[in-house]
Length: 416
Image 1 (spheres, one colour):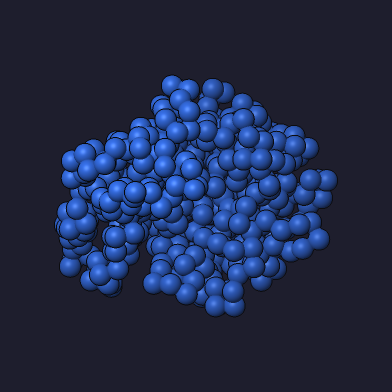
Image 2 (tube, rainbow, N blue to C red):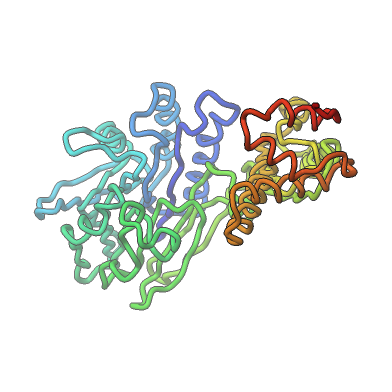
């Protein structure tokens, strides 16, 4: 049996922006790849929608989108669903069936229906949560078990409470939608961010699929099971790694256990660039930024690319980050590119000041001495030429009664 594995379509993403149609266009291509790849069913690993309560417009587009699957053919005539208590029900779905779990974006409390339950009641998908779907056709038995997305701090407890076991004499597949410590090492000790690790996953499954992560990945677990992250079908965050990983779906062959990645052909490209400056003028920064954007904009591109530029370093003396305006550049490329310009020049200057203060503080100098050294460093970068004695200025400023004398010293006058 061939199964298409899709995740994180985030239907409705970018609503009200230039990108509001993109999630639907990419999802349609993903479903078309499943059909052309001769998939017998689609396994969906969560975050079908971008919001837990989709808009009316998103619902309308979703119903129109799913019609292409209802009009396709499948060898599967019936799928049996077993809930956590072992109660069975038959699920019939017109066309190519979708067996889906909800993701963290669709998660709602136990007293509320989530969006995938609504889709199931309308006959578009089969939603499983802490339950399993049994498919039998042509002498082959497939058991798909799924746990929908839950708050991260509850994920390990939920998995242990469910405790799924492989079905006997079947090809066993597990779907879930959570963070994993191995893929979020910076948050491994934060139970609010991630509680699950690969070692916590139940044993005995032939294929384990995790949604949630937007970059595709596949590996083999220590117990021999295939592990796959299909990734998202749309870029939702302009990160460097996103620029290097195309979007698509997997086709999984249950007999050979082969995973084949099929790329979505018409997808918006992301270009990510880091620019570093040292003592730069505003003209230099703006010129380099525009030059980089020009190099990525191609009139042959059907979809305007996403371009993110991260700027760091320092401006020349006397300039502040507020002296830079990228408004003209953004207007120039409107309709040709979707720009994100991250100006870190002011942050770099701030960090430099903090480092200076830390170094001076380590000398355990007095406040007056710290002030004097900072003043002397700054004056050295100007055409000061010893116009006054910095130490005298500091002494005058430290006495409120002598502030006028300090002002006169700066103006080059001496008070008698």
